[in-house]
Amino acid sequence: MDKSSPILVSACLLGVPCRYDGSGAADARVLALAKRYHLIPVCPEQLGGLPTPRPPAERHDTRVLSRDERDFTAAFTRGAEETLRLAQLFSCRIAILKANSPSCGSGQIYDGCFRGRLIPGDGITAALLKKEGLTVLSEKDDLSSLL
Image 1 (cartoon, rainbow, N blue to C red):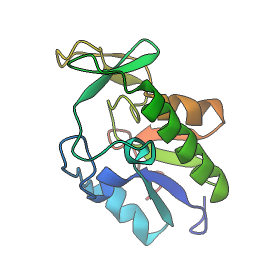
Image 2 (tube, rainbow, N blue to C red; image 1 turned 45 degrees about the vertical axis):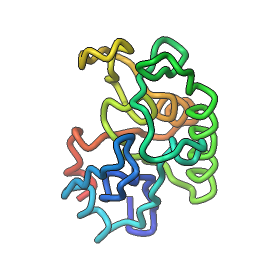
Image 3 (tube, rainbow, N blue to C red; image 1 turned 180 degrees about the vertical axis):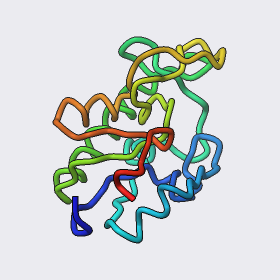
Image 4 (tube, helix red, strand yellow; image 1 turned 90 degrees about the vertical axis):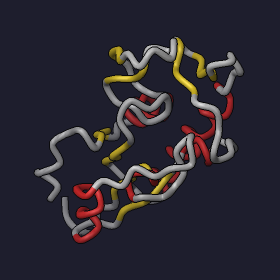
C-alpha cells in the first residue's frame, strides 16, 4: 500500500474526544501512520447521531443496548452505514478501529452484560466493513507492515 492509499481510522485513536465517556484514546502507532498515509477519521457513534458523552453500550446479539437497556441499535447501524459510505467515497481498503467497541471491535467485543468480559465477535461497523471487503484491524493488532 502506498502513501496515496487512505486508511479509515477511529477518530478516538487519533486523540479526538469522541468515546462514550468523552475521552480520546490516542495511540502512538496509529498516529505515526499519518506520516505515510492519508487517515480518514470516523466515529460511527457520532455519525449515527449519538451525543458525546453518551451512556456506555454493549452489543447483545444483533442489538446494542445501554446498561439500563435503552436500545441504540438504530443509531449504531446508521453510523456503520455512514462509515461505509466514507470508506467508499475515499476508496479505503483498510480500517483501523477501536478494539472491543460495540461499533468498532474486530474479533472481540464485550459480552453485552457489562461485566468487562470479552467474547468473540465484531462490532456493528466492523462487521459491515468486513462484509464489504475491507481489512479491519485494531490498535491491538500488529501494524508494523503499515509503518
